[in-house]
Image (cartoon, rainbow, N blue to C red; front, side, top):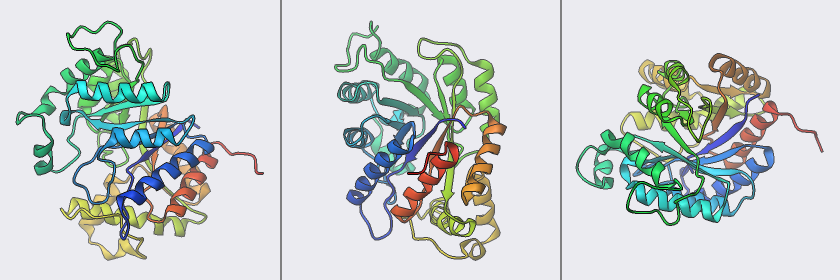
Length: 331
């Protein structure tokens, strides 16, 4: 099976707080490192009561300092919220502290609601329209001979792999044009996944960073010893997503028995659509679903996210996923 990585939103569960989320994120990263996961990525969100990873670079440093070998990065930094120079300096600092272990995924969305996005912006213009130019500027700050008068210190000359994140054809085109690896957000926005993958692979231009296309796909896993238990665990994420899309963002709630039977057809259709790139079930169910997804997409890597309320059950889900991908000898 293809390499697996972890996407952690550092979820804040009901009755808990951000400090607890950060301890759990580090604990998950340490377990993931032992279980053979390739990367541990954190995502930038703002103004979200259930997501603690707003200061993404700071949290990456916390996780990298507490682990040894797993790559740690952003999946991603929402570049319109920031000056490219600031991001170059932040990730240049991280790469200097943890050489050979830092990834930088870049997204075009603000990662927040419109009011919060306005508060975050560097100016009142639509910075998202400048995303391609900002990516090129950021890449130049890491080059050995930057064209700009201002140098990123630290940053210049450091090898920080840059990824383009996306959920539409725009990101696929940009990643292909710049010769960068592409991460598609199929774990919550799968509608254009197959079209974006095909476009990226067909138009990819080799670069100094990457000789051939490389596709990583987001994938939800809710794994447990039985299908029934896994379906129960998945209801926390289902509730949170319905709350978010209904304009009521919340902390990650505890699982709810028979949740799907309690919601209307509109909410059920929403979940069936946005969470279609998911495996929910026992080890055998998860294995079969992942294999089918990889065969359909020819993904080079899967970024696994598992929004489970109970931390121990969340760890168990990631452990099962690692085992079905590459079974380990029992000790």
